[in-house]
Amino acid sequence: MRILLTNDDGIRAPGLKVLEKIARQFSDDIWICAPDEEQSGMGHALTLTRPVRLRKHGERRFSVTGTPTDAVTMGLRRVMDGTPDVILSGVNRGANLADDITYSGTVSAAIEGALAGVRSIALSQVYSKDGTADEAPFGPAIEWGARVLAPLLDTPLPKRTLVNVNFPPLRPSEIQGVRAVRQGFHDYSRGTVVEGRDPRGFKYYWFGLEAIEHTLDHGTDLEAIDEGYISVTPLQLDLTHHSSLGALADRYVD
Ligand code: MN
Image (cartoon, rainbow, N blue to C red; front, side, top):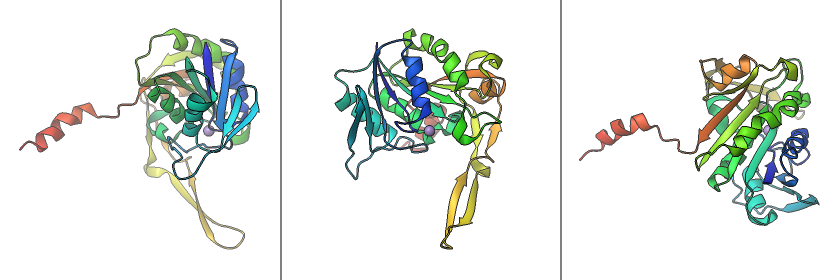
């Protein structure tokens, strides 16, 4: 099995090393192509207005001066000889849950893989409640990664779909199990914009995500993580809201 790895936290991200450890439990045919620098929050951005550079860091190990989508594109079209069987994106430092994951570089890298017709899986480690942003403990991902991935690597998945996995912020022994769940809902109406002043006295703004409301609806990824489970959510690229389609079509009848 040929596996392409990427990580929106960059080629030097600890979560990429974790992912490599997990992937090597399935194959030695591992290729890495990740952004040169952290690209969290870049979503599905594709670099169009400037060139990207490809850097070789070792055997089958490359970085791209661009976005996570750029890294997957380069991995598929320039770095690898032949198409991978699987693309794994992560393990991200931080959660990628609910319906706002279009912000996510981690999930978007997997979306790019799905667009290319490759089985693609995004993996994220939710922060520990007593850890800091820079010390996301990857224990749950390390301990449970292969167990979660095994069924995802041999279950038939429809084309143009991907799978989003999140590990809860617990000790590995405290994890309750794995749940296949739908996306939850994040209420962004209370997201904060923090205003400050830089050392030269000019105002700056910084987006804060802490105030976002988590609605723990039954059967969602948010509920699973809250209850100590690993969440596994299949996603599709078709964002059409099918039940509105008829109502809108009726409005455009001649
Ligand atoms: Mn990230």
